[in-house]
Image 1 (tube, one colour):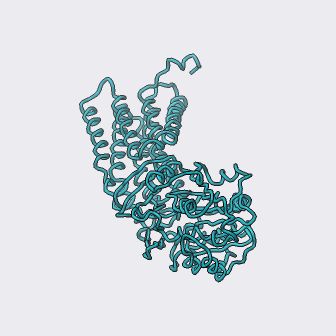
Image 2: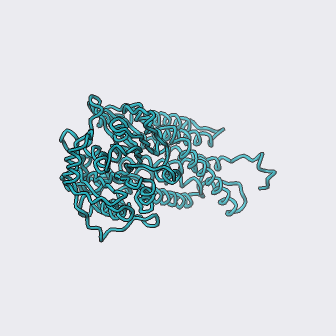
Image 3: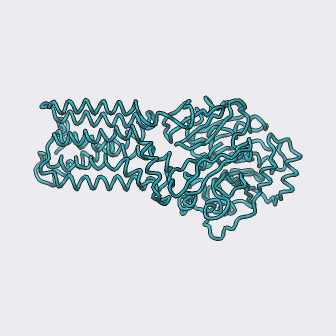
Length: 537
């Protein structure tokens, strides 16, 4: 085909089917990450499962479609598209239920998401794999090479459009269910269009029935009831699914289904989670509280820590939150008020520090980790050295690490401790629960040699006018861990996903400030994979 023939060129019916199947197959693959993340996280293993299953399903569809292609007809292609749309209706209606059931399959952490991905996205991707060999068989091109090359080029262009539109347009603007519904209707419309002008009654009736199934699946979705409480707000941001849910007087922010922040509506200044009190530890460790002027939080969530520092200390607070809609939700639902003393930035924390070489902070709080989703570039020695450089000479870092305090589940904690030691003269750690379960462990690193003892920290706590009593935190002062068997995390090699693996199958607890213990998830071999987490305050 030369350039002069491009303008009047029209796609044939088989090529239209291939183009649309490319859009939907790649769109489904991108969307899969958002569907799976609340239950299994978005680690490299999750994305590896998604890519593996989708490629395997497409390959099987290509193979089966190629075997049947000699009997291919445009009408049969339309039935395949209708069948795919029906399965999308099933996904809209029961994806949460399917996720719950598949998460009970006893597999190791690396493979836990495979059954769910296979059940949810294998069948529709497999069906769409039939379209390309069918279209090649029905192509008017001369020769197998020209026909197949042309068909796969059209399908690839559709895949490019599907991935681009889903990533940059649909996910930031619409919910997962709405996007799925859009894909379903696109398949129905295509299935109907490629049978024109000789549309049979059965085709028309099927198009109507499948359309009603799609609408009905959205209206009657089994996820409509939320056991967590009353849904106050929910949206799909550029980064994740964001929900604000009220359970009695406790308002909680969920990101990708994981609890990240909580506020007592009757006592908004109360720390719902005990570990957020520990954010005040740097104010006990600094030689003079009055000399602390600038504080940086990497990770905002519901802004529990930043709000307290703004209100209780005479300091300027900068907050780097990669998801601007999280900050908007904190303003709307968690009583966040910006002013002269607080500024928020929508940016990656490491990039922010690299782009601000002249800024110096007295305290930096790193609160951007989750139990099963840790951005590795915020864990490495290079990042720790960057933080040290952005701190004042006597500056202090506090990192909120989620890990076990000992044993195999503590591998990530020990690796993070060992890595911080490469950049800071002294590193301290404080557990937030007397239990040996997975919990929030606060790492505190100082930019100068300090050699704090528990007695010295307790003296400072008694003498200083802190907004919270840090005695429980100081009592949880931990001995230096054994780190001989753990790696130093670097930009070149940071096996964070492997270090997090042992935490699957163990319960994660959060001590609440009223003295109770909140268990976010108790995992047994029969429930591996259901992994909600808490990260930001």
